[in-house]
Amino acid sequence: MLVAPSILSANFGCLDLEVKAICEAGCDLVHVDVMDGHFVPNLTIGPVVVKSVKKASTKPLDIHLMVENNPFFVDLFASIKPKYISFHIEEEKHPHRLIQKIKSYDINAAIVLNPHTPPESIEYLLNDLDMVLLMSVNPGFGGQKFIPSVIEKSKRLKEMILKNNSKCLIEVDGGVNDKNIHLLKDAGVDIVVAGSYIYKSSDYKKAIDSLKV
Image (tube, rainbow, N blue to C red; front, side, top):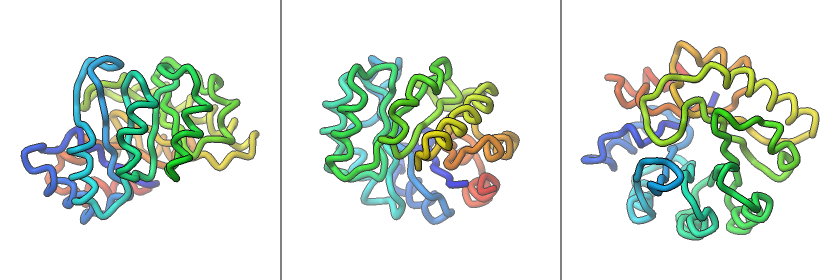
């Protein structure tokens, strides 16, 4: 299991130190939540801050867009060269076009599904995607309770990926901890995003290691 700590739960007063700490603790990716206050009722960070995160990080960035006007934000963050840029299918009218735009920047493209969105809605895109991010909470805020139905949803998605001979990875974000990590692993999940579970821990390495099942 790959682990991508979400800096949404970090101490922004010393963000560079928080990013360095999770990298030294053995994370695989650094998850960056970009919220515009429109698609979700919260506002987070823009490219100036994310550029500083990139400088502090020794691991690739995983940028999760929770925004309206996805193409604008893809262009805004592309120069930072994250490993992944993910966008919500619920907000995008032309997902295939946006996938190609992301890939044109030599960045891996991912689609995000809210808890109520069925995986069948993106089956036709699986061979174009590098990753699907399943939300196991409603997006917008950290520290929420895990929605168990994502387990069955992940299993269905994994079956579709295998059926379509896709190399697409599955990522899950929201309420991930050592209590549900084995269920996620058994459901075919490849990457987990964890924010408060890691950043509220007194030992980042121990928390990250507990998710590497």
